[in-house]
Length: 149
Image 1 (tube, rainbow, N blue to C red):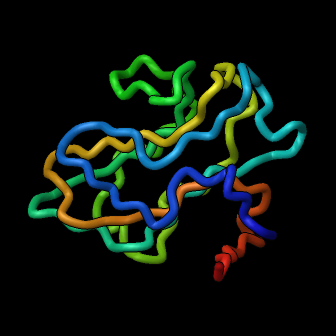
Image 2: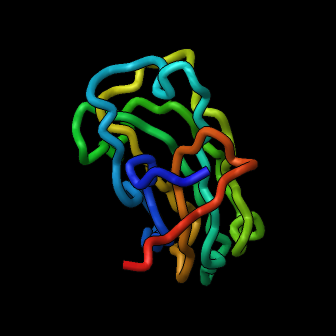
């Protein structure tokens, strides 16, 4: 399977968040409100760690799949939440781990036009940490290909 660039939120993106909440990487324009973003095919929401997360303290990180009517997805709690990972401790955020691999919800809140990933860091600021975040139809067969242009 080839990962579609349009289904990618973050590619080896630094999670440069002090204690607080921020939008991570890009958003996907769904074109309008929808309930089934996979058009009949289940999609997986995946977050992979590409650089181990570190902190001077006992930081935790939560990944939220959220949608909003605006491309700059609100981080003040007003965006529509579709999934929250819960607070992930640093031990779960080492290189090669995938702290989030879950099917996108097909029931519940309607997806607004823009879909993205919101990251919340609690307890202590991060000193390092990078991730890939994307949607895919089959994570077990996922293979990233990079153009050599």
